[in-house]
Length: 292
Ligand code: FVH
Image (tube, helix red, strand yellow):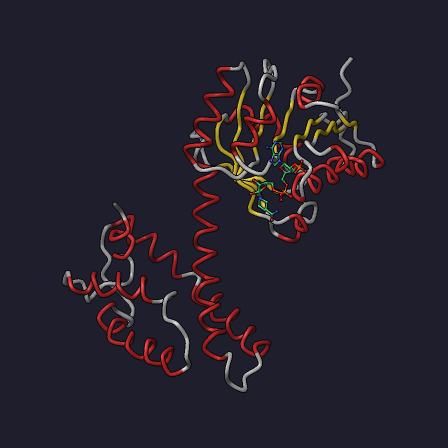
C-alpha cells in the first residue's frame, strides 16, 4: 500500500550555500534527503540533521527518482555526473545556466534516459524556507514533470512556471538579474555623486529605494508599447526632453568628480534613437537599438 502522506524522497547534488539551504528545508519538512558534495565535509552538519550522505554522485542518483542539482556552473554538472546512470531519473537542474546551456542539458539528460526540468533561482540562500521573503524559482521544460514534483519543489521556495522550452527558466532568470544590475549601477552612480558631500548615504538610501519603487511600474508601459509597436509617449517625459536633460547629468557628474561611465552607454542609445527622428517616444525604442 502507498502512504499518501509520505514525503517524496529527494537526492540533492551540491552543498554550497544554496544547496545546503535547500537541503535543510526539505529535511525540516520531513522529506528523506540523500546528499552528495564533491567536498564531503560540507555534508557533516546535514547528516546530523538526518540527511543520508552518499559517497559518490552515482550512489546519490541511484538512491531516488527525483534528483536536484545545484552546482556552481554548467561545467561542474559534467564533472559531477560523468559516467553516472541517469536512466529513469527526474533531473531538476537549479544550477545557473545560459538558455543554450539549459537546452543542451535537457537534450543531454534525455539521451541518458532522464526527464528534465530546468530552474532559475530568484532568491539568495537566506530567503530559502522563508516564504514571506518573496523568493521563487522559474521552471521550464517538462510540464508533466513540473506538475508531478511541484509540491516537493515548492517546499524550500515558491515556483513559477515559464514554459516548455527548457531554456526559458534561465532566460527569465538572466533577464531579471540583468535589470537588477542596471538598478545597482544607477544606485552606485547616485551614491558616488553624494560621496564627497556632507550627505549621509543612509539618508539617501530610503529616498533612492522609494524613487526606484515609484519608477518600476514604468516597465508595464514599456511592455505594452513593445507589444503594440507604438512607442509614442502618452506622458510628458518624451525622448527629446530627456535627451535635452542629459548634459545636466554629465555636468553634475563632472562637478562631483564622478566618472559618467555607468550613464553614458544608455545616454548614447537615447541620443541615437532621437537622431533617428523619434523624439516623441518614450524610452522603449532603446530596446530595438540593442538587438543585433
Ligand atoms: N548563492 C546565491 O546567492 C545564488 C542565488 C541564486 C542562485 N545561485 C546559483 O546557485 C548555484 C549554486 O550556488 P551556491 O551559492 O550554492 O554556490 P557555492 O556556495 O559556491 O557552491 C558551489 C557548489 O558547486 C560545487 N562544485 C563546484 N565545482 C564543482 C565541480 N567541478 N564538480 C562538482 N561540484 C562542484 C561545490 O562543491 P565543493 O566546492 O563544496 O566541493 C559546491 O557544492 C549556482 O549556479 C549559483 O549561480 C546562487
